[in-house]
Length: 546
Ligand SMILES: O=C(O)CCC(=O)C(=O)O
Ligand SMILES: [Fe+2]
Image (cartoon, rainbow, N blue to C red):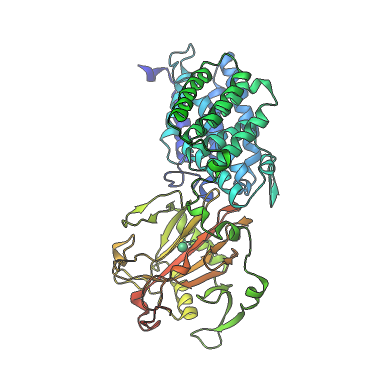
């Protein structure tokens, strides 16, 4: 029986890994929340400890020696990450951490999958068991996490107009880290080809070729990059450019049968284009395709980069101490847009309240969803974050709801039926995390409905109150593209606005977004105030302009 060859204590190692790796109830991806990425170095350390215990009892031979060297290398890398609590807040660092875990560890662990009867039987058994364990663990990063990390870098480059050379050398606006290797660039470029972002795919693949070409040992990778570029050009009606790529690739590796095969196919495609007079696209035309994506919402990227209102427009906005429902208590109110009013309230949540919310949220963080047109809840690429719901049965939530009431004059009553407000949605963004331009209002056809039965009868999301539970090192602003309005993330503040007109219909000017986080860890808590509770507090009116 296979099992008899395994020393009994190995099971203990696996159990230890399992326990530590799934210590927090994490589900699905890791890249969608910085709080999940933060746990990875400790998990890698536990894996290294598992290997140490296994290797301690093994007789030295070639395979064991090689494995020991590998583990030492990983230990060195892990040490660099382990004691730096901000390490994963840098997207380049996180990409490289995920690359190491998914690719480098992944390849090592799967090395014996096809050789289960290697002469030292406990080695393949050990490796395969650890491999299976990691694959089954929902919180162990997988290929889709690496894809998410690649797309994060792609997104950050184009939204913030970063120079790819800077990224390659590890230079971000707020910090400097180690650079990306040619293989990193190739991984990112190949991921970009899978998404509808031709310009970026071309950019990253070209950069990978520039870096990899410096060393002839990389020829195989360079050819791979050329083939990816060619594949994309053909997809976008430019077989002539694909053929150019193949010619260069063939020059580098004249015997590459894959390149020769592709070349023959592209030649046929070319002939077909010529025969049927189909127009070839130029690189410029390819790059200008797909301008309808949400990221091309006018003003969106510009606002993410900084203020775009003119000094005159800004001078019209004011700050004031606003009277609350309690005499002698004033709120620090800042106007970032006057019509419709987008307001920021400062110092409305304390550090200890923030810690309490995060603690409660931690155990139930799940990938954020979006209410689609058919009213289903979907995990999507337009919102990269995790969230948890916190009800007013928690005393801290109850206290905060009362605060919202005395400042806004609206009802934030949260209860199990006909609720005036939804529970707090505590959100932690992920790698390059963002929420693309969207409306918070639920429905345009009078049938509002949300995640929970309990608040289905509560009407529209009349208003949004959003606490900022953290600062962000760089990026992550809340922006309103149609209003050219921008709110800088500031721990302890909150943004407030009405999503509907007084006639109950959505105010389409309130299109807004959470910009991608360039560096840092962004937390917010949303409180959506529903129309049923505001009948006498925000009287309705027929005038659609109000
Ligand atoms: O995080 C932000 O700045 C915006 C979040 C948002 O709009 C939402 O969660 O609905
Ligand atoms: Fe929103």
